[in-house]
Every structure is written in structure tokens, then in C-alpha cells.
Length: 402
Image 1 (cartoon, rainbow, N blue to C red):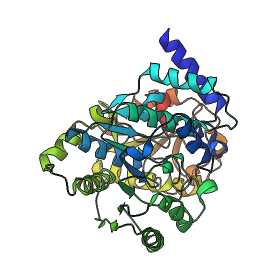
Image 2: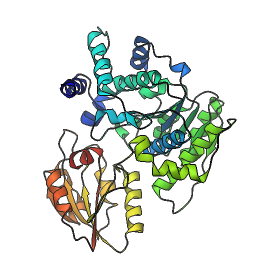
Image 3: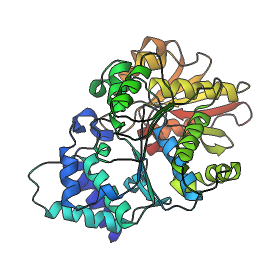
Image 4: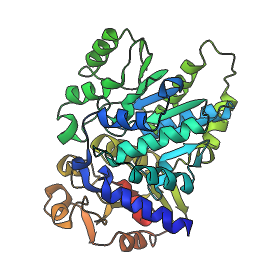
């Protein structure tokens, strides 16, 4: 019965307040006022809570998860806020890897429903304040927060963190954040706070001055991480998370060792629920899942697959949201791969007609599917000795097939 009540409340939340991952930019609320009013409504003392705030185009979720796992392995009680979810809404809100209880979600939504609000908060704003309430009542020692979209006007930017982190800048959500690297960097730089250290994972000649200017204006100590060539995406995110962890350890008598890092990586799923990033779904046949969905993320994922499996035939299952730049993304697709291209349920899915009209895709070996489960069933029938299968392009695609 509780499960029915939970599903009813979540369904109401999705319907009442549009969720970005379902409807796109119309769900985006470019203001912090609603979030601040909700925080006050629920009397959450955010100034007494300790946060790390992570923004960036790619790698936010994995950087947050590795950092949270490091903190957990150092015996801290850790809250973790990430998005989007793949299967269960509660994946977004965890303490020491454990998802928020359904009963707490039900109670919180009951309170929202019973309150005569004179404003309409978004799905994300309500979810974020629910997370804050849960972390506060769970007495977390540290809370690791992934921004939802952008930074400057993201609901999560209501906090004053101990440390801010920006992973990288790429072209994504351009209709909202701007269509140049400098515009997007300005939005991400909005998480830089007064007198608060900021770590920058990757920067370019375009974006570095943006971060430097913002940090200088805020008197925020800034560190640019030295980039290393031929480093995998996961290794890059791991290195950034370790440096963030070490920054938090400054002036504290806590041990840091390679053994701690190894434990954090080994236990990352248990400590954070992390999955869907270069994840081995099955070994026979070998099928790898990744949530890469924009140009930067997909380029890196393809490069990793090519490096790791140069002796294999690659069969790729791909689906995308309709706001992605298909011309740029499809230009990255290796011509030697075979492709299964599919739609997924929901109004944000790119339609098969759009894929079929793309000149880059027309040059590839492609089979089209209206149904993602049928496409995945085909992928699972590849030759176990000579082929590997990969799935990428969207969280929604992963949600439907796993």
C-alpha cells in the first residue's frame, strides 16, 4: 500500500511541476526566489550545513560520487544529491549510499500539497528542498551537491559551500545557458562564492579568464588542475575528486592514502549508488552502458571504447533527446561501427525521421528501431567472441532498457 501511495505522490509531482528530464527547457525556472521561499517554509538551517558544490558540463555525477565515496570511507556521514535518476526518483537523494525512504517522500509531498502556496515551484526546486530537509534531519557531516543545470541560477546555488568545483565546459543546453563557451562558463562560474576555494577540472583559453575574473571578484582561491593527455574520463574525474577531498582535509587530522582511494572506488556503488557510466552490463556478450549524451561526453566515450577494444567489432545502440546537436554528435560516429538507432518513450525523444534525415548517419551501417527494448534485445544477440555492444546517448534510453 505504501508503494502505491509513493507512486501516486511521485506521479503528482511529475504532473504538477514539470520535470526537465521529461519536458525540457519549459521546466527550467531561472530564479532562486522560489527555492529560498521553500527553504524558509520548511525552516531548514542551511547556513549550519556543510556542502561541496559541483558544476560542469560533463563528469559532475561521477566526480560527486567518487568524492562522496571518499568521504564515506573516511568515516563521515555523507549526503549526496545528483540528477537525473534512471529508475527511481529516490536515486537523487542518498545518505551513505542509502536512498531516502519512500515514507519521507510521501510526507514531504503531503506537506507541499497541504500548503496553499502563492507561487509554483518547479519539480527540481521541490526535489532539492526535500533533499536539504533529509540531509539536515539525517545529521550529515558533509553534503556533496551536483548542480541540476548551469550554476548561477540553479536551485542548488542557494547554498554556501566549503568548496566549489567546476569539472569542465562544453556546449550543452545552449537554448538556456547560451550558445558559446564563454556564455556557458559564465553560468557555471556562478557557483563561485566569496572567500570559498574553487577547483577547475578543465579549462581553455576561452573559459580560463572567466573563472579567474569571477574568483578574483569573490576573493576565492582558485586552482586549475593540470590536465593530462591520454587520461580516461573516469581517471580525470577521479583525480579531481581526490583533489577536492584533499582540499577538504586541509587543517584536519585525517589520514589520506592510496588504500583509502582504492576502497572508495571499490565501494562506490554501495556508498553512492553510482552506475550508468562506462558500466559493464553483461560480460557474455560484453555490453557497456554509458549516459554520455552531449558532444563532449560522447566524443570521450567513443575514444575510450576505441582505445580499450581496438580488436573488437563495435555494435552501438544510440538514442538521443531532441535538443541535442545531432549534426555535431553524428560526425563523431566511427564509420567502422554498426549502429542500432532507436527512439525512447517521452516527448523529449528524437524521432527516427530526424535520424534518417541526417547526412552523417546516412553514411553508416544502421538499423532503426521504434522500440528501445527491441533494439536492446537485438544488441544482446551479438557474437560473444568477436563483438562488443555499447549503449549511449541518453539517461532516458538507459532507464528503458535496464
